[in-house]
Image (cartoon, rainbow, N blue to C red; front, side):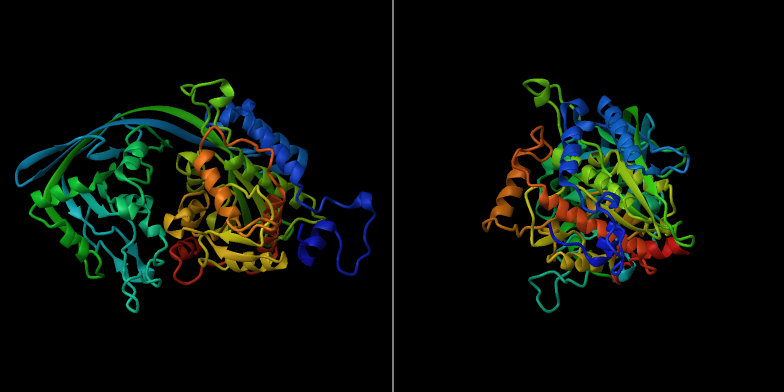
Amino acid sequence: MKKMSSLAFALLSGTAAAAPQPAPQAQPQRKIDGASMLRHIKALASDEFEGRAPASKGETATLAYLQDEFKKIGVAPGNPDGSYLQKVPLVYVQPSPTLVYTAAGKPAPLNFPGDYVAWTARTERKVSLANSELVFVGYGVQAPEYKWDDYKGMDLHGKTLVMLINDPPLPDPKRPSRLDPAQFAGAVTSYYGRWSYKFETAERLGAAGALIVHETRQAGYPYDVVRNSWGRGSYGLKQAKNGSAGYPGVAGWLHLDRAKELFQAAGQDFDALKKAALSRDFKPVPLGATISATVLNAWNEMPSNNVVAKIEGSDPKLKDEVVVYSAHWDHFGVDESLPGPRSKQIFHGAQDNASGVAALLELARAFKALPQPPRRSILFLLTTGEERGLLGAQYYARHPLYPAAKTVLDINLDGLNLWGKTRDIELTGHGKSTADDLVAAVAKSQGRVVRPEGNPEMGAFYRSDQLEFAKLGVPVVYTHGGRDFIGKPPGYAAATLDAYTAHDYHKVTDVVQPGWDMSGAVQDAELLFEVGLRAAQDPAPPQWKPGAEFKSAREAVAK
């Protein structure tokens, strides 16, 4: 195990540099315990927990386990109401949509889900659009740091927006064959390219509906993935009356071929407008067509819970500020249609994300073992519904137990390295905030280097719970295990991770494996411990770097 920095060692051991060593029996535990972490994983991924689906027997077992562990550690409830739980009102919605567009006086009905998918996030039996004007809004982006606004102040209330997938792909002036790294992160997907951002912006601007045109090459997956993901029922948050759903009334995806037919029927050229959308001077284009849509909903309410625990800070002036460690406890439950015995029907979720939960519990124990709590408070947040769309984190973001302006950092744990120590660690979203500098400094103290994540174009930064904190303006840290394994041959990392993705990821076979080497998980957890400790102690908390798409959100909550 790599040595910790002198600061972390001193704090964990209860010693100062010049102080004598205490008697062995008086020493608090000063290392992350891999055996304890593995014990937690085995319990949470066992058949008894039935795949930890929200609103199931698996949730009941998980909540009992987590609360019991926090009580054993001595970490207090984190909800100001005195409990360890934050209620999260989930719903399962089954939409049945119909959609017709009219151009040049001719109605053109589309087939669901082959031509389009559409849904509503509103828990209403029927949501309709009647002759809503269609407006092409390019990439649907408002990015002040890039001086980019696809909307140009147009009143879009009651209208349905048609928008392109991803970020504007702007060529590098010096190397036109590549994307400009100074604009929308170049080849890396930025938040502005995420479908969730586009729908949220449409709702914020008062649009009645929004359709994203799917393009296989740009998305990295075929339309079948859209159909399979959104053409069936989905989970969401139950909305308070008149509350924001995060989506316009009707949201959906449109097959590229159908989009081109729509534009042609309206007397427009899809390819020409797509090219025009690459200019900052682009203005929304009314298509001269309308859309009528109806979504009939059936839904079930599925109340669930986040789990929260807290170690209060020791500094009277800073204890109201918090560093958050987050990890999702949920997985996919049981699929009784699968063949074989019950154990072959359970999505155990050992790596994803019993490992992250186990690490969070170990971190809580390590912080509790400090002779004095850090200056800022430490919040441990275990979320529900991550696998259903970051729903528990999203609910916390909308109903924070501690203000966003007082939350200085989120460190998210989602799937740990279970295959041994590495000389490096991957930092997803590298370059966005000064928290990266903390990670780099701690990694250096371990004799490691920090690398940006592999395949950044896949947008991993926007696909786990830290995103909801970033959207609030809170700097975040989201790491993955490194690729340079100590004592392993070249290609080991790729072969191991590819095998996990192909054979175990989101499958019933994500179970505890006899060959796991917990030293890598311990190494990463120790790093994240000290990153959080430094953030909790430092008078100057982490800040977004210039150009980060979430910097403006931080400035807004600070006012």
